[in-house]
Image (cartoon, rainbow over all chains, first blue to last red; front, side, top):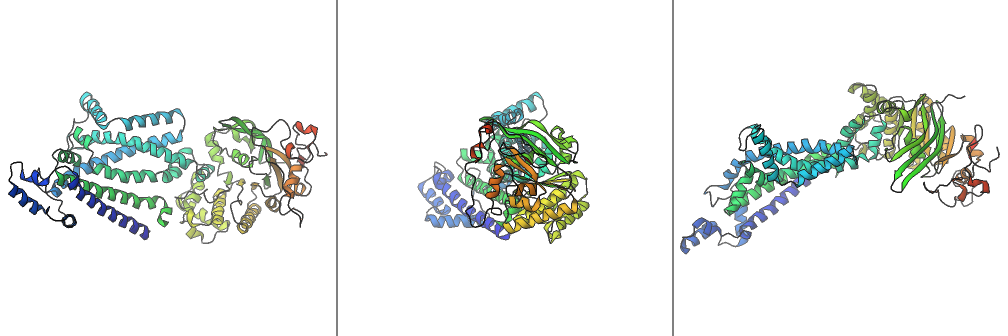
Length: 306
Length: 320
């Protein structure tokens, strides 16, 4: 178990080092000159040169990289060009809404996807299964802005049960979380279904039936525990995906999260923010997977041995 | 009339496949009296596992389908039971163990929890009561360190131990009958002997009936009171173990005996039965063994009936 965790942790560390190299590379990949962005169009060559030296851009690349990582280690994510403020606090102020939306979305995904997948698996090949799979296909393939706007139209305009958008109370969370939950729930239901169908063919399911267990209990007690692992792994991935900003949904619902920040930063080519968000998202992807890796052996004891 | 615990009557069962409907069991009839061990013997693919699983209706349906027949257990036709009546029978009055002890236990649950399940289902036992019973039954099937085993997971146990756990689980509600579907096939030879020994002992102690599915005539000789030999979905010979093993009437049974290490003549090459079992769908109107049979006659194009008193055989060449 300790070896397993140590392996996971060191893998996570290596991934993060790789990520810093990629975010560092962003500076050179994005077609914008930071010096020009900071100095403005009317600046003189002297001023530009001065800024270049200030930013350390005259140094060789390895030196620049080490300086970048050293700043990161001190919690300094750089300074936004456009907003004239530090990136760290800027992202930190956007984290709570995004975390909240992530939580709401994952709960919605699970509440939609797991029962639908279970039901479809238990009625495999029958009408209910086909209907559930068509529904999941539709929910997966509907663009998020269409889904989001439709929900707003129905539940905020026709039936004014929820606010049109914004952030603040629980009712603000419902529609954006549901939009993400419907799309993600489609994926979850498909994964749950195929995983459960595979598990239902195992010998221990026959054993459970031979004990005289009602079918729903076979499914929930013996099936779920074995079929849920891919879902746990997928939640881990989802944490990362939601943290890198659910750009469309945050914009549709006016949700002041990281996605909005990222979107605005891309429009103004605000490289430090782009770098910062990418890095934070990567950290959350790694954390999410680490969390999934730590939950997995609690569900399946055989993993502890690997 | 003998007193029957289980009586299978003219069971015809098949599977719907892409190639159409295939009959797998053809007029299978079996009797099991209280306290008796019946061996059901045959090559792989002859339908013995299907017969075993059909008793508890464990075959997925569809694609499986019972065309006709009855499975009487205690004066009730299992085939006509509702789901809840069936669930009340399974694991409670009839226990079952399977060929694959390695995969028949749930890898994510402790032995103790899995053992306790039948009791909690059928007797509505509380956690403490179920645990005590689980400990008791583990000791009964000869598992040492029972206390510690309860908290272990299946992957921490050897194949032989897992099969003992399976037996314990099947017996925990004190059923009247145990179906053992090739319980020793996947185990090492020494472990096989131990498990058979255990089944014999348990039967003497508990007086339960056992339906033992096997392809090994040696197992039959050691364990069973009576034997039914199956070939291509039909019962071809049945009688007491002594009758069938010492005076086989059906040429197929003779072939099986000759090909079994225990009964083959010493110092000679063991003869194999030439040819193969005809697959379902390729079985005609006549005796299914005809094309491999050394005694084949013209009349074998018609199906021979299973005839005789206690020792029955389905063969035209048998003098009755």
